[in-house]
Amino acid sequence: MIHIPGGKSGTTKNAAVFLDRDGVINENRDNYVLDEGDITIIDGSAKAIERMIEFGYQIIIVTNQQCVGKGIIKREKAKDINHEVIRRLGLLQPITATYFCPHLATDLCECRKPNPGMILTAAQQYEIDLCKSFFIGDADTDVKAARNAGVKPILVLTGRGKQSLSLIDRTQAEQLIIENDLAAAANFILEQ
Image (tube, rainbow, N blue to C red; front, side):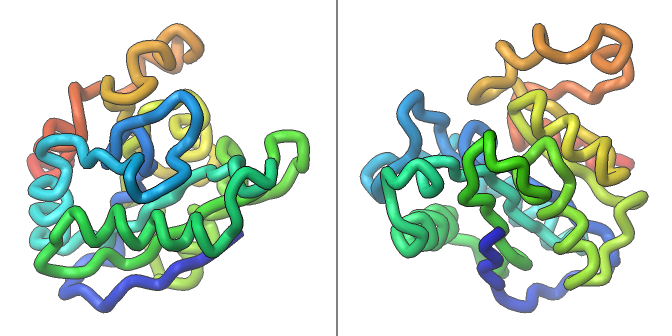
């Protein structure tokens, strides 16, 4: 697991909003985000993140980047891409951190979603109360990671969100918060 610390924002809560990167903040691509030129920020994402930071939530990006494990890009390139995503958001206040899992799905590591390793590590490092926290993702693995960590999952319909609905157990889907995009998910969180 790779940890990229952000800056100290003016958070007032010990709660966080964990965000998947591709499909939630950045447009998802079929063949990975391999270069800064592949980055397309989803409309409304920056404002949604700003609002949650202003409300006092720590913002932590948690993303699987199997392209590193496959040898398609190096770890440093993956870090550069993460930095560029954050730069393009143009946030007035920094996010708390980014974590990415560089491993293959077959590596059976603890950090790759749906395992909760990245979330649990962030909770320990930043003193986050997981019961007061949310995870916004576009994949069934995001929903499972959130539940495995004791965080409230929100599935957005951007990225792979619509396809992921069919992969989620019907009973679990009925208990799942589903929103159109990150902006709508932020509205839901801020109304709680």
